[in-house]
Length: 273
Image (cartoon, rainbow, N blue to C red):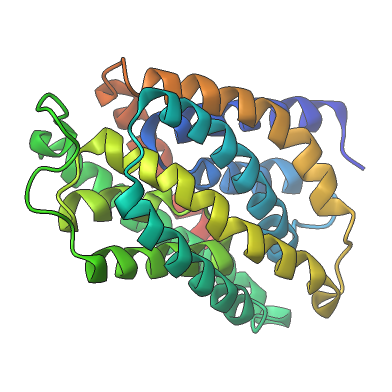
């Protein structure tokens, strides 16, 4: 049973994750999942099972992604030509990702946390790279593309990477999709964030259904993920609306610096547990 201070911290975590996710286009799960584990484990009960956490965050991704997409749609930043390739590729890959994740049973489940730590280390590196490459944050020019039209093959490859990350680790995929769209598709930052928000919804929906249906394979409760979702989703959806609004109006340099520090600390915690 969660204590009062844990409930309060989880509500705050949802708001923080939703706001940062909508603002930076990182899906929010990259922040929520490690804090969820630390807060849950600090209660003194049984440690949080990774499959329970992944099942909860996949549902959370749908909620936050939907909320963030509303803001991006109103801003007119979603690129339909890119999204129509990203989405189907991410859906197929997310189903494969869940199947691979379900192979981690018993003592091997700890490797899911370590894989998440490695992903955080990658995101840390990408954010440091983008911090010192200011042209990756430029949106001043008209239009959303910084070069020739994106290759459908490159878009599809990014969609597959996003789907695998969603199904395997429960991440929203923005941590992969946003920098990849900038580097390989030459899209501007705000367009990449908007495309990512849409993709997160569709990549997470089938993965969430399958993950919840297969929780019995790991001997964990089907109820616990929904308790977590009930605490995290409402404040996260509010935060995502605020963040997606701010991303079209506010400089994100200082928030990115704080985010980099957070990534370094939580990557260490995930890799050493």
